Length: 94
Image 1 (cartoon, rainbow, N blue to C red):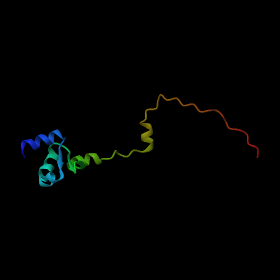
Image 2: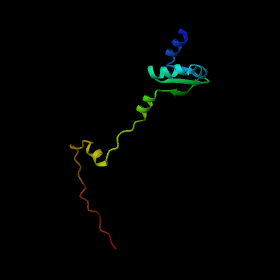
Image 3: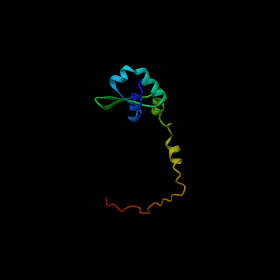
């Protein structure tokens, strides 16, 4: 790869024109592993991003599921004072 092309990629945040990405796909993949996401443009606009499988796995991880009781206990509401209104309602004529 020529030095000018490398400078242009660095300046543009690792963007590749589609035709360049197709011609140098091995390099795009290698750079996705070593330098991070690689953007591919179509007609000058971002179209897709090539990322490593490890990065995808990291992004796709979901938070561990938690029981409602555990969630509520973790809210740290110890200092919260809640008072119930003593209103007992109204009389209803039947």
